[in-house]
Image 1 (spheres, rainbow, N blue to C red):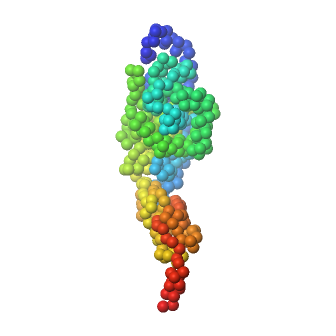
Image 2: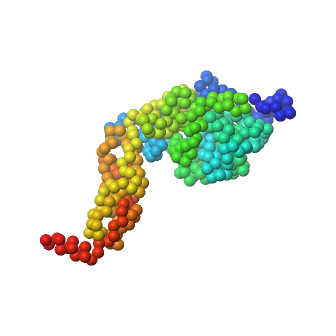
Image 3: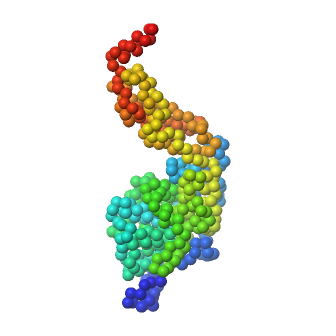
Length: 415
């Protein structure tokens, strides 16, 4: 699987066999197919009772989320709004396995967007990357490989060699890159995540949660949606070696177009999937499944729940009126007000049309108001639940009332 380089293939293969670390832990072995029977890839069922499901977004009429006894933890998030549609043990620290590579990909895309990398740029392959265990692109120090190819190898076939090569290119070293990973995690509010390597290979200090994985995935989909062009692919060929994607949901569900999977003995079968259904994008994260089949079924149950019982609704559009502010302090006596940004909410399907709103005006209107000036806050509620608050702005200039206007208004009260 290596290109001839003057060193015989036999000598090169022998060197790799002697130098590669022993595979005491199972982690995305690249030569295997994700759905192929593999006793080493079957983990024990979670011990204890299944995590209790909840839906922070549901109302009294919404059915309870699915109970998934095969999963250690799960989260279903609306990708547009960030609303949590279903969760079970969302903040439980667990081993992330190759879901770690989501952060590796995120930092690589950031470097591309910032101009520090180019997709067609070639990346040197270090001895550490060459010797990476687990799933691989089968790179070696003679490989001529681009950032684009490494991203494909990272996301589709979960190449640990690709992860190390990108980490060394972006951070200068793996240690520096790990510092970048943890700093970015903190900035994103991933409060229960700690990275120790760019690959996800087992480490006692490496951990994350289902909620943190979903939050990171939403950030990637928002900032680097081009990842979907890669993560939706069901195979990738590099240097005449074709490998199937590790995401088994792609072959099962045409609405799914990413993102990543992970498997070690410690983590179980983890799937982080995103799907576009009925115009709504969802992120489903399942941690700790015993098999790919079980975790795929769990992902499907979550996506079905989200599609059936929730929808995204735009309740106010940027710079469009939602109310009229009446005030004798204004020369015109009133001014139209609205939100500065479009407000989209994820609602239970039975609650669409039941959202109410109220506006608290806080601006001093004595000097008048100008276009886009904040004048108060609008609050949207469903029953007793507050759904969203947003600033309200004036949608036109409205100067202060002059002396003649004030006198005229006072006289009108007596006529």
